[in-house]
Length: 260
Ligand code: MBD
Ligand code: FE
Image (spheres, rainbow, N blue to C red):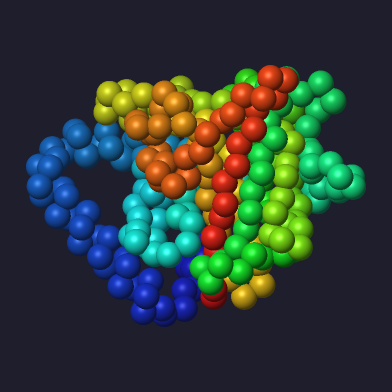
């Protein structure tokens, strides 16, 4: 096998050294015996082979990276990118006087949701023409391109804010999400006696010139999984009301981006 050539990088060296020294401390503290060690290696191997490493990392680790980076920082709190973002979503065309409609099947099941947002920056300046990328699960609780029986970009798309930084998008109300629980990640959850649920959420990524890209999620008041989200992605300021408008639901939230 050819040896991989890695350019020396002090940051990577620092991080790998920290990682290995903490792993060694962990093994000492947990007093792992050899059988437990073997079980652990086999589990980690199954996790990788099942393609669940990104899922596992995003559920159990990503929130800690974000909290370390952003707690008490001005602007909207970022939340998890998660394992279900894919590149290349379609740009959504707008009909005059109507909201954008997130890519969906003609007979898309679910409750209609009108979501209204505003994008501004920490100086209070509205951000016109900011790119809004959005993705969510469907009325079977699944994500296109992963577990849903739907076209690749179903309930995914991007569009742009208007001159006042506003946008309005028509979609369906997302459902609470059960992360895959039949594989190695599910095994882990079972041992931890933890349910596999995430509260219903919309995923957003905002991009605007001169500003830090904002990746976040929106949640809804009253969701039964808000307090025990398996991925710990909920932040108080990201929880909004889901208002009943008779034939549809409505929700809104304002987003504040930081300058680069
Ligand atoms: C999701 O839908 C999600 O958003 C995250 C962060 C992890 C697992 C599933
Ligand atoms: Fe998600």
